[in-house]
Length: 316
Image (cartoon, rainbow, N blue to C red; front, side):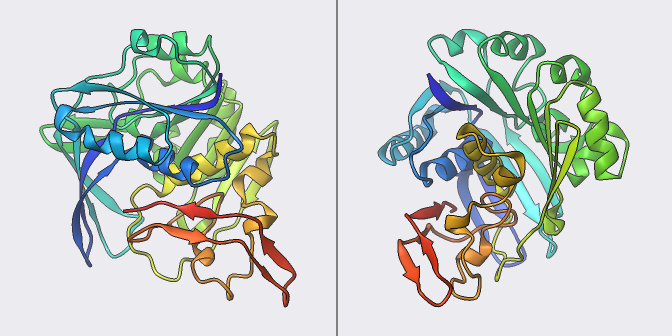
């Protein structure tokens, strides 16, 4: 049995920012998987994904990186266009193609303690799929896709019509400052967390952009600070890498605050390592680079800090 299984489509993304334009693979399952793969191998992990038959080379690359992937093909990959403003907390999206939803029959033989559902669109996972999956392990949900309705090619934010049914089976829910208002109608993060907990969620994780994040569990709040990056290249996938770090730590038995904040071995002095400065909130809130960054084992006598092994964040 795996500690964590992420389920979600790998997408074909067009990223447009004021500084560059690029075509890359993406999606919650993509960023989550590479983040997990770059961490010390202390948890077992599997990805279950669907993508277009012409995108299967991406699966081969992931397997070559040591990621355990079970892949299903469909006619098209989910194709997103993500357009960012100078403030990269603000994003507009279009969906240029869709893939088929996941079926519970595709989960035969898949076992995990935690199933992380990386929804991209509202019909990726049915309520019945989640109810049945919850009998096998804890359900962790990134809410973003459940709040996206596609009208033509435009992505419209909508309330989650089956939220009360699904959240009753959800152990961990991750959402951001915009999604929390859509799902509850509230703007205060603490009020949002209490409301969601009253619907049955055991761990509520709210990311707040440059303001860090808030975790609510066992009727206790944990405020997690944010570290400003030296240079913000692309905010796509930041929430996904946060989720990877959080679940990775929780799978090892770390507490809520520890899971939301990097462990001591990677909380090194930010002035010494510019790259490590960009780690925050468990693996990279507002963190993205043009290529892989690796933090090598090294001891800094001045600060008596030792980075015990390679800690890498993946980005394209």
